[in-house]
Each structure stands twice: as C-alpha cells, then as structure tokens.
Amino acid sequence: MQITRLKIEYAFLYFTVISLVVTDALTVIEINGTFNYQLQYGTYIIAFLNYISVFIFFRIKTLYGLSDVNKSVVICYNIWLFYLIFSLFRGFYLAEDYWSFKFFSLESVLFTLIALVFYLGQNLTFFWSILQFYLKKILLFGFLLIPLTILTDSELYGRLMLPTVIFIIFIPYLKRKWVILILTVVTAVVLVNSSWRANLIKIAISFLIVSVYFFRRFFNKTIITIIWLSFFITPIIFLYLGLSGNYNLFQEASKNEDYTSKGSTGEEESLSADTRTFLYEEIILDVAINEGIIFGKSPSQGYISNFFYDTGGAVKDLRYKSEVHILNLFLYFGIFGVLLYLILILIVSYLAIFKSNNWLAKMLGLLISSRFMMAFIEESTTYDLNYYFFWLLIGLLSSNQFRILNDKEISVWLLHGPKFLKFKYLQAHIEDK
Image 1 (cartoon, rainbow, N blue to C red):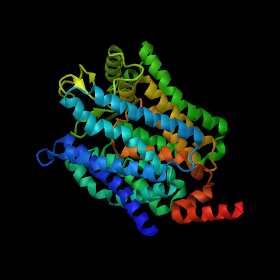
Image 2 (image 1 turned 120 degrees about the vertical axis):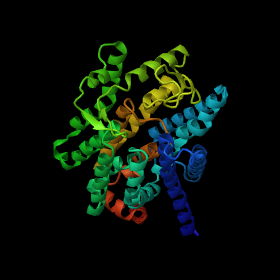
Image 3 (image 1 turned 180 degrees about the horizontal axis):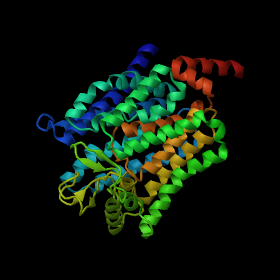
Image 4 (image 1 turned 90 degrees about the vertical axis):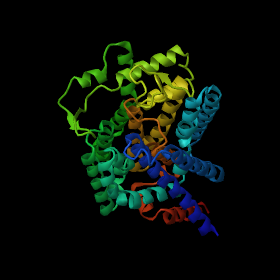
C-alpha cells in the first residue's frame, strides 16, 4: 500500500513538471503566433493544467507540511505566504473589468501561488525524484524540440531547458554521462539563441559559481561573504544611482554597440541595448501616483505605459506586467513585498552558505543570491519552469537534513535518493539509542 501511494505521489510530481513543460511551450508558441488558429484556446488549456498543479502543491502542503526546516525560515516563509494570499484577496476585490479579472485568474493567482513549490523542495525525496526525472527524461529528449524551436521561436528550447542553469551547479557530484548531457544542452541553448542576454548571464554566473568548488582552497569565508553580499548590495546601489540621476547602468552599457547577435527574425540585435530604463520610470511613477508604494497596487492591477500601446501584452496603454521581476513585485506587493522577498532569500542563502556541511549547499546559496540581482534585470514574473525550480531550491536549502550532509553523502544521495535517506534515518536512530 505504501509503495502504491508513493508511486501515485511521484506521478503527481511528474505531472507538475510535464504540465509546465507543455504550458511553457504553448505560451512561447502562442506569443509567437505561428499556430495562432490551432492554439486559440491555448491560454485556457495552460491555466487548467497549472491550476491542477497548484491543487497538487496544496495537497502536498496539507499532507507533509514543513519537516525539519529552520525555524527562522518557517517564520519568514509563512509571513511571505500569508502576505501573498492576502494580496490575492485584495487583488480580487480591486479587479474592476474583464481584463483585470482575466489577468488575475489566468496569471496572478498562478504566479503568486507557485511559492508553494517550496513544500516540494524541502522534502529531499521529492526534490530528488523531480531532479532525476528532469535530468533523465526532459533534458535527454529535449533535443527533439530544437526543430520546433527553429520553426516557431528561438527562445522555445532555451526556456524549456532553463533548469540546466541549476544543474550546472550539480556537475561536481554527478556521473560523467550526466555532466556531458548538461554541457551539451547548455551548448545547444546558446547556439540556438545567442541573443537572449539574461539567459547568457545566468549560464555565465552558474559556471563561475561551480568554479568555486574546483578552486575552493582559494575561497575562504571572507571572500565568499563578499561575493554573497555583492549579489544583494550591487543592484540596490545601481538602483539608487539610477533613481538619483547620477549614473544609469543600462544607458551606459547601451553605448557599447560592439556586442550583437542575430535575433529570431535573423536581423542583427544589440546585446547591450537599453530595454529597461523606461520600464523603471513607468512603473515607479505609476505606483507612486496611485499611492501603492508601501503595499503595491495588488496582483490584479497594471500600470500605464506610454511605450507600449496595444503591444507587449498591453490593453491600450494599460500593461499588467513587465519583463523585470523586482518591478512586478513592487507593482503588485509594494516595498513591503519586496523586503519580505529580500529577507527570505537572505536568510535561506545565509543558512546554505554558512550553516551547511557541503559545498553543493554553499554554491546553490550563491546561486539563489544571484537571482535577487537578476530580478533587477529580467526574471519576468510568470508561473513557469524558471520559478518552479527557484522555489524548489529555496525549499531544499531550507532543509536541515540537506545542509547537514557532507560532500560524500551528497554524491551518494544524488545516486540512490530515498534508499540513502532511509539508511541515514536508521543510522541516526541506532546512534540515538
């Protein structure tokens, strides 16, 4: 009976992953418009599949709760989750027309509740099964999607392979064949679309972080602390300089026109073009005018955009989200929501880097810290594979059981999964006696 129940639970977990692969693919294809007629109900299919997954998250939360998670993380996460749910009720109340209700029900509820994936990540058995499934199934057969990517949108394959940015960190602990697969996928992603700047930055950061493992004798606690803090301090400094008018990083970078690449249309595109300054100006001004600085405008409200008009997802001059995650958090949840998000990542990354016995936790701690920095550049707020695996990592790094493992035990855990965890439990039980 127990084995049957476990298989059912695994099937539910795999469904959440497969449905995301399908819905991410449908989203990219639908935006591209290649099969517009055939996918006229694509938005509703996507929402239906994703709502089933959210129900599964709630079910796992109810059945398993939080097991062996650091108390400070539990408090911070519960406050964050409560504020998210409160904001959803507020958003429902403030929704006024068809478009705001549509955005709220088809997108806001989903990208807000994806934080529940935390409950999957903090369970080492669930995390291991999802990791193995994606590595051995999705990555392996993902190459079949390259022709479809060429036919539809150059970002399709890269978006479905986004978890490889995380898998790069696991390279020191995996068998050679899986390392080769990961490196091959990363190479394919870059070759298929070399103009996706944010993805190139993520890949570069992951390789820099994993290099810490191979040169760990040169990285003492002080150096790692500086790297960790820089991921949080640097974007805040540049944001302050930009708002004060002293220095605009995006505008300065755009002056260099040497870095170009062919886009999805085949034309040369500048990799340093400034596509962010006007987003900051429009959203911050709109939120300030509507007195939403503290708690935001709620997840059902958009912002007035002079740049977009009936384009980029805008309905006339009203746009419901931007390409920058930190701006979306500010728009929906205000400064209070942004601070809660920052505090949660700070606490989890601190525990991972400074309160763990293995280098995998330390490297993953640096990785999620870098995601805070990336939130100022891109990280579009969406229910997708990107945030699914982000919250999976947040949950994993919050687990005391994971952080207490040493490097050798991490390798064995990745190889044997539940069998190793059962052995560790029995060993600890015997030692207690």
